[in-house]
Every structure is written in C-alpha cells, then in structure tokens.
Length: 511
Image 1: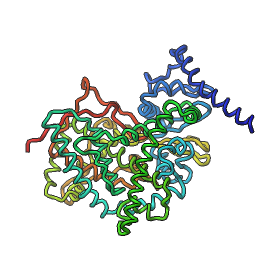
Image 2: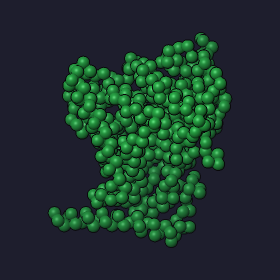
Image 3: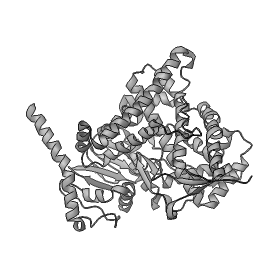
Image 4: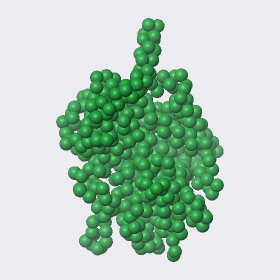
C-alpha cells in the first residue's frame, strides 16, 4: 500500500515538472515547433508522442475559442480531433449532424461525465449543470414548474420591470447627466444577479443599488468561475490536483473564493428555510422553496442548486446583452428598427410588449449567433461510438460541440455570415403583412443546448433580454468608449466575457 502511494506521489511530481520542461523546449525550439501556430490557424496542429499538440495549444492559449473554431471550420467534416498530453483526445465539432447525434439521438451515450464533474465540482458540486442520471432528472423536474406562463409574466412585470425603473434607469440617467463612463458589463451582471435572486430565491441582494456596492460575493464568484474554468487548460489534471492538495497558488485562491460563494448560498438557503418554518403558506412560491419542500433539503445539495442557478441566471444573460449592445451601437439601422418597434408597442403592458417585439428578438438571436454566452460545451462518451461524419469516439473521450464556430459556418448561414443581420431571422407574415420571427434548427444553433438538456430558462432569458433592450434603448443611446477604437476581445470562463469590461457613455434620447 505504501509503495503504491509513493508511486502515485512520484508520478504526480513528474507530471508537475513536465510543464517546466515544456517551457524550456518552447524557448529553445520555438521556431521549429510552431510551424502550425496561430499565425496560420487553418493548419491542423502537429501532434507529438506523449505531449500531443501541447505546443499549438500553448501558442493559442489566449484565443482558445477562436483557434478551435478555426480548426473545426477548416475541416471538411467540420470536426477535428485535438491531442492533449498523456494520450488524451478531445473531439471538437461544428457539424449539426454530430450535434444532433450527441444531444438527442444518442443522448444516453454522452454525459457531462467524470472529467467535467471533477473539474467544476468544487464550485458547482451536484448542481444541475454538473450531474447526470437521477440527480439531474430530479432537479430538472422540480425546476421545470417555475417556467410556466404565469411565472414568466410575473418575472417580467414585477421583477424585471421594478429592477429597470427603480435601479437601472436611474443609474443610466445619472451617468448621462454627469457624462461618466460606466462598465456596462458590470452593470448588467448586477442587474441579472438581482433578478435571478428575486425570482429563484425570493431574495433581493440589491446589488444594483445606486452606490454600486463592492460585494465580496460577486468578486468571489468571478474568481471561482475563472479559476475553475482554467483547470480545463491544465497540462494534466494532476497538476491542479496537487496544487489543491498543497493549497498553493490559484488553487488556494479558488478555495477561498468557493468558501465565500458557498457561505453566501448557504445563508440564502437558511433564510428561506426560516421563512418556510414561520409561514407554511410560502411553500413553492419560488424555485428555492420548491426544492426545500420537495423532501430533498440536505444543506450541501440545496447549496449546489443555488450556486448553479446563480451561474445560469447571472452570467449567461448578461454576457448575451453585453455583445448585443455593442453590436447595436455599431449598426445604426438595427438600432433604428428596434426603436421603431419599441414605439409601436409602447401602449402595451410590458409582458405583452416584449412578447411581440420580433425584430428585437431577431437582433438578440443574431448577436448570440456571433457571440454565444456559452461558446463551447462538452460531453463525455460513455461507450465507443462513431459520429455521423465518421469520427471515431472512444469510451471516455471528451466531445465538445462549438456554438461559436457554428455561428461562423458558411454552410449554415451562407456567405454573409460575418454580417450582423437580424433580418435573417424574419419572414413576412402573409396574413398580417408584418414580420414573423423564425427560429433556427436547435442543432444548427445550439446556443441554448438542445435535446433533453435544452435550457429550461430559454424563454425567460429571451424575455428578460428583450425587456432590458427595450427599457434601455427607449431612453438612452449606448456609446462604447474603447481604447483606440479597438474591437473588444471575446474571452470565456465557462461563459463568455468582454475582456476588461465594456466601458460606455450614456446619452439621453430627446423624446
């Protein structure tokens, strides 16, 4: 037993020193090793014994989403196999037939899997986005009751409307009056965080209050998501596992951040439990109440659920809105069309108004095509398989489908795919003479996933985004303030971000 433990420790130490050896080779033989680097992204990376394509992976570490997108789209099958160190492979696909195969027809063979579960477990635990089987089914079944028409109307007309009128609009008005620069990415994250806490937990953190409080939880959540996602890029999982065991470097920072996040989530849960004990009539009025009343109220499990829904409700929606406002600011004709639609619907109640805003819906869908909130998502093969394009998948292999690449596929979107053109989502309604929104096939546009794990909150997210777009653009013009007028940089930590934030000036519209 002792010999086995010693062997494991020695192996781990060797793996820890391999990155240092890699860096030495990198410096010494840079010119030779990077003949297929990011300078020529359409060349497939060289793979070497044991270390795989680590040199190309390292060369593109700052643009991994863009690099893997280039590789997948350059392949005739729109699928590429990337060789990681120590004989590990990742299949990356932008092929709709493969996506349908993975997410629907062979759903049973593609799970989140052990790899993803272990990497994200410290943060998400057994939450809905990190589990398979019965735990996933139970959480999905309970959560599904919160996404009916009655709940959606309540969410838009009470939660979103009050957050807009009482918090977001006054903050934007003050910024316009004082000609100050705001980080709109931060503002939108605050907005969506308040919203998800209100609708899912019946709790108002007031994170978007006028003082824009510097909450420890928010920074801890950012750090936890960022460091957890960086584990995927590690030379080998044993590297970060040893750092975690020794409690050093980024893993020490992650432990501190996760503890703060979990403390916040536990306090939310305990407050809700107290409310339910004091007033039984509160049962099932929000998502957290439903879970606590379901008979599965074990503290760590419910904490995992709280954290998962914060991630879903805060990060994905705010990410989509950031890129939407940036794209609209660069396309005046799109902004004009949205303003015309807002004016036409201005007499309706908010829920009815946003439901009917087809052009705004098209513009939001188009922005998510180019900048999806989750640019890459992955599964793990339970058994050996062959994808529809002929790619062989061995048991345990990670298979990533790539919404970012699919949004740039000429085969799916045509030669004008680089254009931001909401009209591609619309068709004329022959009965009314107006325009009608036409959704894309979910396996060609898997921004909300597809199949049995399709996003439960899809309609809620779209309605929320349309409400914010309407509420903001009706009164303000958003003007980006980018250094040297450079385009923002797209990065991803589980969900997409605009690197360095989204600095903007706000201008009041003349009504």
